[in-house]
Image 1 (cartoon, rainbow, N blue to C red):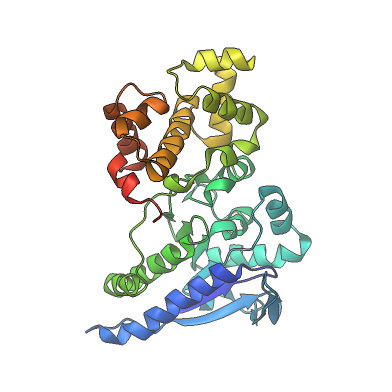
Image 2 (cartoon, helix red, strand yellow):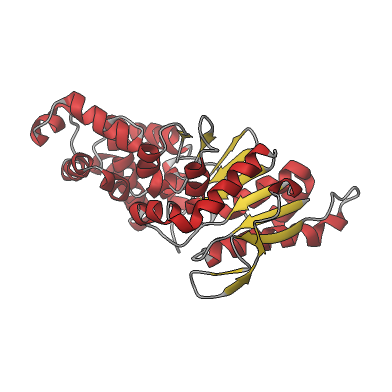
Length: 323
């Protein structure tokens, strides 16, 4: 398997290291299988002969003047830019025109394209994700959705597969991305690598989302998020929140849908569950007491919310507390 890892100046050391480490582990373990898959031949590709990582390390690269058709997979490593507006400016910088063209050429040549975290913006900017399901880092979802409306975004996913495309979420999701690419060749090898790396099966970014961070993309959503936290122990109607914020319920619905891809009620539920998670992991309050503190009449309502929104129970949330 010929794999290209596309890097640019400012590539995130962590994400690149994870990709190289996972593919290296796959190569080290492949001969343990009765029918080992082909070796993973990895090369870094870039506009020139080297790039500097975010931490200043020199990364030797192969220039992208060669045809991408010689690759089976082309993965874009993340860059170390967390804020969406600087990230969009970075991706669209004239120095990256050749990178975007290379991605389009790779798509035309049938190369499987992949990216994780901020690297997904390069795929989206090139247009190769148009009409395809995709994910990105949870805190970038609102900006991604507004900038690339043709992409079928679901930022709650850790991993998302399309036709010849694989995208993954926030930084540590680079390992999920690499394992999914190994899985395409050998499920047995992917499982063995996963166990050597002691990586669990993760399907959603939802438990990691910080509501006040995702709200930042829209001033009305910011005000709504603050209102919900101020009234979190109460049972309230969305119409009441809209009235107190001086807008119509329809305007509030449009704002949360456009920014977050969800309704005001679902966002309020996420805020309640975020507070409940903190209480479960940092206090010894009963589940019933936690439920009351976040506006639910009983423990059963909180259990139903946790199961519906996260696929876990309050007891499982509490079991995950930091020791």
